[in-house]
Structures are given as C-alpha cells and as structure tokens.
Length: 405
Image (cartoon, rainbow, N blue to C red; front, side):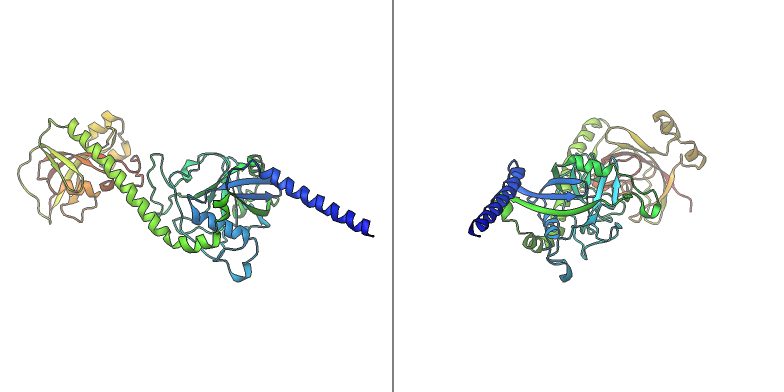
C-alpha cells in the first residue's frame, strides 16, 4: 500500500512538473510585459498589452478577462467575462470582433468609458487589438477587435499625426491597446470563415467561433504590480483631462505649423503691398484699393473669391474662367449660377469660416485682398470636400458691391 501511495505521489509530481515546465517553455521567450493568452475554438493567440501607454483600457480588458472589473455587476464578479463569447462580426481583409455576451454586437458590460488615445498606437499592421465602439468618445465597453491588415482609417490621428474630431458624428476613432505576438495564423483562419449575408446578422460566422478562455500572463515586476481594478478606479476619471490635453497639444502644433506657413505666404507675396497680421493668425494684403465706401452691419455685400490650399491647389472659385483654367469647372454649378458673386451679410452673423469672415469685415467696396487663413480659423480638424483636415487656406477676396435692398 505504501509503495502504491508513493508511486501515485511521484506520478502526480511528475505530471505537475510537466505542466509547469510546458507552461514555462511556452512563455520563456517572452520579454517582460503584460500578455493575454486568447484561447479560441480555432486555436490560441497571444497578445502583448500596452499597459503603460493606455493603462485604463488595458485595465478594463484585464478586469473583464479575470472577472475583477470594479464596474461589473455583482452577479458577474469573479466570473471571467470573455469565456464562451463568440466572434460575432468577422470581415476578411479587415478584422474579427468579439466581446459581446449577447452575440449581437449591441451588448455591453453594463458600463461605458471614454476612449484612451495615444498617437503612437496605430492600426498599422495585422494583429492590432483595439476597442470597438458605437461612435463618439464615450462608448467603449467590452467589445474589441483584432485587425487582419493595416487599417489607418480607424486611427484617432490622421496621417500627419493630427487628432481627429473624435467627438463628432461619423468620425472613426478607435483605441489600440495591444498587439498579437503569436497566433496571427489563428486570426487569419477566423477571418476566412463563411459568414452570414443576411442583413440582420451580417458578417456573423455561420458556425460559432468562441473564445474558450483568456489567461492574463504577467512577466516582470512592473507587470506583476499592475492591479487592473485599482488602475481603472484611480485613472478612469482622468480620461477627459487626458483628451483635453491631447487637443491642446494638437492645437499648439497646428498654430506652429500655421505660423511657418504664414511666413512663407508673406515671403511669396512681399511685393504686393503692406501686410495686416491679426492676433488671431490671419495675414492679409490689399491687392487693389476700393472706392472707399464702407459697408455697415445692416448691409449685404456681393463677394467674389478664389480659395486655395497652401500648396497652391484651387478648391473653389466664383470666377468661371479661373475654374476652367485650373480644371475644376463644373457645368451643373454653372447652370445653377454659382460662378457669380455671392451675397453675405456684413457682420459677425455671416455664415463663413472665421478667418474669411474676419478678413471680409476689414474690406471696403471694390477692394481686393489676398488672405492667409490658418487651419483653426478655416475648416479645422474635419475634412470638407476637397479640403483635407487641418488645412491652412489662402483666399483671394473681392467685395464687388453692396447688394440691392
């Protein structure tokens, strides 16, 4: 009996050692950091989590994965949130999405939190983990996706590094929080499955693919010290201030770029006359003096103009011949009478971009001016037709006459 017991004990010790050694062997090549082992019915993926760059987002993910999230309902505490959840949205050459316990794409964990954005974390390669949202800055929950290919349009920052207006409708901004370091072939195999073409269940796999479990792996003292519940509780409230700081930093960068562009504008037009430089940032030079008649705030004036990007590309004009010369003539616009002076009230209620309005209200009848408008006084951080986001503009403006009353 003693021999039998000893044999069993030794056998169990060997088995335990085997499992420990196997786990160690699987992870011994990992550098220090925080990782998520994502086991699915298609295989296992291993993701490195960017807990230093976006601690709140990682704390959210880890807390859900381990069932320790402070905002989870009591009935969900202690239960790994992601276990047995399906990939409900799969799009080949794009991404695979999961994290919704309802399996519909409309569910959430019972709370929302603000996007935590970092300009250095991008959707620039396969295998990037990123938060799914329903639009805007404050709709992150439990859903996340993994990219199959680079997809920069999902970034919160444009190609020039400018922060997009993420708080505005239909602007795509997603918070990257991790990257696959193993298992890209698993991501690919999931993205290749047959999916529904039915509108109600569009892109849902015809056969369920599940996350069986997510294990959080901590290597190194920093990762082991990362307390997801504590981090979320302490730092989540600071996300709005973090975003405001990002916006302020972006505005300062734009102003600095605009300042350099304004200097280039002055150098290129130094022979045209004396410059007026506004404290707001516009620079204008009168290219033709007018009759001296000064409109009053009750007047409407008729205005001609030509608008250029600061690289010299024409994007709009009321001058038909110029439009034809520059290749932007539009026959429909001509038929509708758009190649003619347009009316504008001569006061602050004018529906013009701020820089154009400021310049116009300094002009007299018959006067022509060339005006540099920095991006924040133009169309700002959102693209507008042929005008890219954060574009400095140059306008030729003419007040033709006071409109007939």
